[in-house]
Length: 374
Image (cartoon, rainbow, N blue to C red):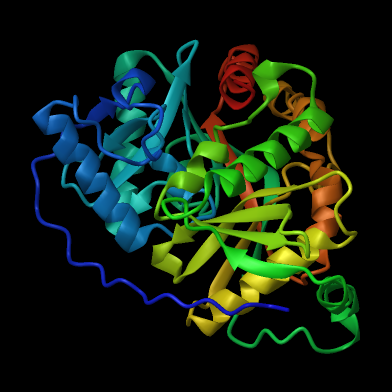
């Protein structure tokens, strides 16, 4: 039985004009471990807090990318363009500044932000790398940056979604099987949830992680994705499947895409012995719930490197980027994820990485590995 949940939309007020600090660092030590990933730090200086709050306002108004929500994670640094109309998040290793997806803000603000960030990196002696960018602005190339497609992102239009027809057979099979087996669909309310429920979710996460790697340093790839701590954030929506014995069988979490009137898939985790098709059930049920609430778009996440057509010889920089594939693939299985998401018939949008022509490819490749696999 699918239990229907409801929630009203919040209205976003226009952002006030603030004095902007060009770049700030949100260090992990500034945020207690039990605070949401995007919570302001009580120890942050006044100008830094204003800068952070401005970025948060921009995210609420303009954030539409599948990883836009991750820009405010405490481990990132923020760069806000001088007029305060756009910002980007980045991390720096070995003198390589790698952005967390696209800049967020108004179109004009984004153009200024890209230009100013490139100039800022030049002043610092850094190599700017715009990583997993959804909007390949002509400005990137005008600035002398080369491009490389590294992934494709899946988006689902909720407005006419019904799961009817032959091509939705697999999804309907999962929904019907869940009903026969007595699985129910629930929204997690972290503040009201019982300790037993939260412990089950933690255990499922640990069980899932144990099947992916024995290296604890790779237990979470948190640069572009959330972690189990993310689901305690009130802004994040988490749904779980409960069986007849009140045992949680799996869960999915979604992060907001306010600028696109939608949500983006973050975590997908289940028990090893869960019902086949459980993730289909959870994603399909989530999609129907979001549609019922009036949302119009659902991001199913990227399939990094899997669909990229390599029909030409690659530069050394491109080879350095592709070098990451076996490490990430072994953890998340992106090739199989591509096939899994394809059953939802999404629209696939390319994701690019932009980097300066003539850059030190080895430096970029090692920096990316340190950041992405950290």
